[in-house]
Amino acid sequence: MKVPLDPEPLTIIVTDLIDHGLISPPTTVFGTHSGKRIEALLMPDGTFVHRGNIYSSPSVAAGRAITAESGISSIGRSYLSVNGWKFWQVVCTDGRHRSLADLREQLLSG
Image (cartoon, rainbow, N blue to C red; front, side, top):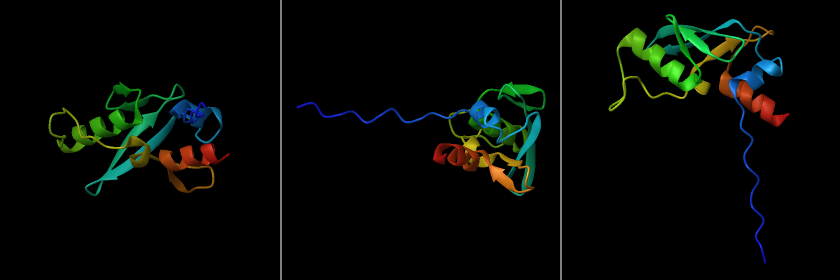
């Protein structure tokens, strides 16, 4: 008897949030690290721009931005290891601040 395989988990990327109207780029995304607000620009193609550098991953963008602003990095890396989905927030159309992780969960829950 074959055991059914679990379906592949649904992968959500930043452009899915854009395509479903949860984010309207270009827009400023922001997070706080050690009491300091850090900002980047989220572009229509889902990339993040900080200090002229372009990143395709929210986590790499967050880590590099924090390192650029604070000089802190993780052991063995040139930037801080951080979950960018939880770090970056946007101001939604209702005026609330929501993390990319919250918006991803909203999209997954349907």
